[in-house]
Amino acid sequence: MTTFTHADRYAKVIEVSKRVRWEIERDVIRGRQFDFSKAFLPDGLSLANELAFMSPADRRLLGQVQGRTYAYMFGLVERFISFETIALSQERVFGDQVALEALVRMTDEEIKHQALFRRLEAMMAADMPAGYQMTAEPNAVAQAVLDKSRWAVLALTLDIELFTQAHYRASIEPDANLSPL
View: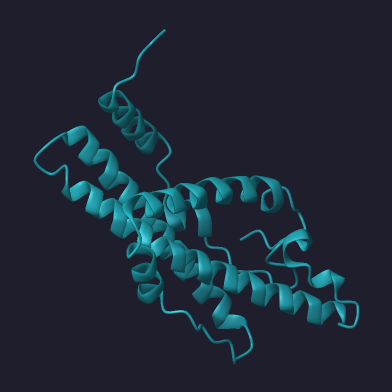
């Protein structure tokens, strides 16, 4: 049986990070715009299709508002993750440089997630009706989370990372009726 050390695990994180590196414009946006004739979230997540009193166009718009909120909320919760990985990195500045690099790479990815969600939300906002309001302040939410114990913050981070991957694979990736972007 092979035993992996912390250094081995961090080295693997670095290797995978280099291999799967992605860019917002090149790999996600790719010059596309949102298709407002399509939904932004799958029906099973939006549930707008269950509101029979609304017209199909109104249900689609409600789902698009939900999609915009989804992007805003994910950008908002990502805020505390980058702060926590920076804090963890600072503890390794004069120590294990492999661990430091792995944590810096994770921080870079988390900041990129924030930028992606801000970009998507702004793209939706540009073509949606006026009146949408963001009521949660990202830094206040991040501070409320960061006021908890480190283990609580790390457990929440792990939960968010796992459920977003499972959620994407189960509900968003396979739905051809969604706007491709």
